[in-house]
Length: 248
Length: 248
DNA sequence: TAGTGGTCTAGACCACCGG
DNA sequence: CGGTGGTCTAGACCACTAT
Image 1: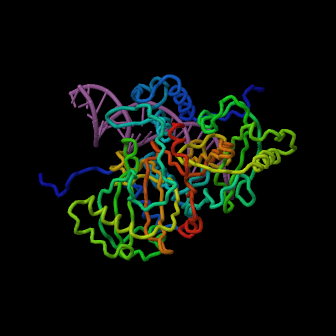
Image 2: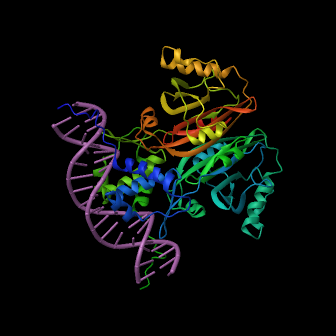
Image 3: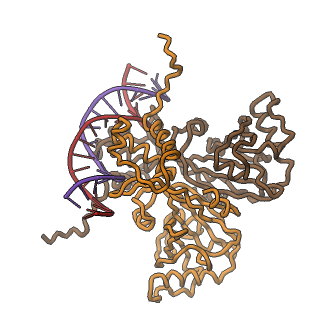
């Protein structure tokens, strides 16, 4: 039979499609340009729409494309470099950061992983602060900050008139302590319905979940769970912020 | 018609399915247990297999499930905490790390983003070292380390007999310099065919891409692009390594 | 209202793994 | 070999956006 074909491992169509599209994006399209619609593209490549969509989904995951229902598919700008770890260790809410306080409330039940990080009982009273991060004019992250009530005993944020003021009250109460240390984890997640709304994405959209534990007085004083849009963000650590902006 | 239904916003089926399955995983399954196959599950929930798969894909993305072709779907163990940023700043290849050198070679053409980070021409000769990271017995990351030939002028790794020895030669030549600093970015990507093989995943699988730039003598001396399995890894920074292991 | 992407279906075949 | 997940099809309808 001696075919010249060696190891005929047929590449999936969607994978090949993704490669072709990716090269086309590099050479024939510019940022913001809109692509033909999915039905036309599928017809042009001779595949089912579902197959084409599989390729588009991958490209969107990689931050190459942006798709919006009712609008179309556009070429995405390079990912935004977002500083996650500034040189100065500071409490959340310090002056000059990109975060805007949204609201604050209290609860007795925090997620189990958060309770573990706080080294507290899941049932202890905890303040929950919601913040959004806007960088370079784009909404990039949503955050829930958990502060045990015991850490900010005098905090009476309930009395504050506006929602942002309630959030600020907790942040200010936190800042009176001395910050000793901080540690972090980064992992992949999918946006909850609530986070999705804040990030202007659909529920389930891929996000980078940054969990930060703040230590003061030898004990965990707060835990922040920040969810960043994975399609548009590149998290930067150390002095690399300026670099990554250039690298975009 | 006064239905009791308010704001009938129909939740997508796959989203609801995901929620139901997620709760079932918490309460009725233990780690490693195998789920019924996709056709049975789809029938049981009264949905098409594609819809069920959409839910399973989300759960796999979140590290809750593990699917292997020809085998089945199993409940995944908690994500492994992987230290990305040890307190001591060291060159790659320092004693005691999890990385095993695989091979090394030379090239004249590096990816454009890498060239930018190296502040070098894309056409300059560069050594490329491939390493794999095995943590807790599991293959978690694959890496390409780019070292400009000018940084390790005496390095003659070509002569080394074995592939790992070639890699070590470059790493050792790098270690003679003084490491001044390091910066990093983390972003979402999808596994290349080559990385997928090293990570025992399918091409296109979601990965966390950690780009590290090593600075020596006031100039970039090396750039590492490490791709971590996003389904099984949680990257840890700072002193949080022990914590995250507990938190698992 | 027309056009877009998002969801869903009911099939089919393929690649891979185990016994 | 039988069973699994992976790929692919050709449709249909829905939710959203802009005009």
